[in-house]
Image 1 (tube, rainbow, N blue to C red):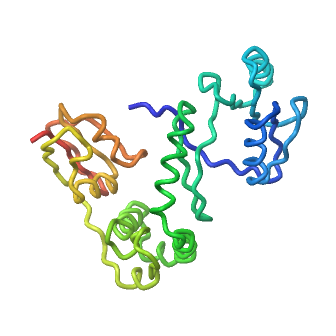
Image 2 (cartoon, helix red, strand yellow):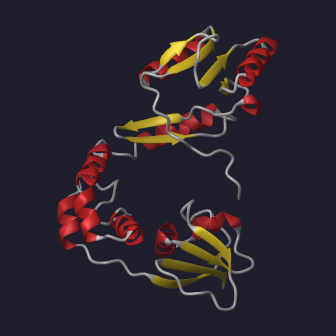
Image 3 (cartoon, helix red, strand yellow):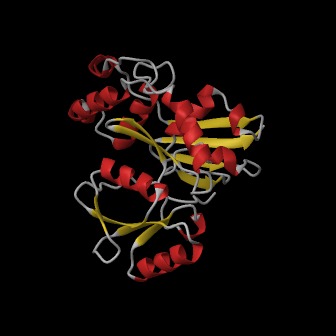
Length: 253
């Protein structure tokens, strides 16, 4: 399935952003840009991105056209069909940021999801990220291979595992000292349902850690999408070539 948009995190501190418009929609975007450290400038200034928060339809579309003609990426408030990018609802657990987007079609839904997730994500999440960063040299020494390192982290961060992000204060150094190498190879999963919510915890973990996913006919896209976004996906064939890392083969039972 094609992604509607590619989520990106853009560092705006000290960078110019054009903001066009007045009233509460423009004020809300101004507060967001100021929080990100952006330098807010007018339409005639030099910048790479712009936000148009004008209520009048004709005036808004005219401003969007002028800015896009200059090669800028434009966000048109409440006009998703004219947006090159959208601004998500944000959960801040610095340095962890969780962004929830709907492609601009329902800011209310994104806000509601943010409120639900705020209650689930502990305040210690940022501390876990910082500990993982500090442990990066030791982690690279322990797992020189990038794929093996990713699988080890994936297993450690799973539900109920030593570094479960929702499990409170995690001992990263203690986990790394006692961790064992992750299994690789070929895992075959016979699916009993086309609903991704029916995946078992073991199956979901395998997909999340797979380097490649082989899929038989009938496996729905919704389940393939539960794999990592950058995992290799290919249709199954009679004699798949053995490869390094973890391969997950999916078929309907």
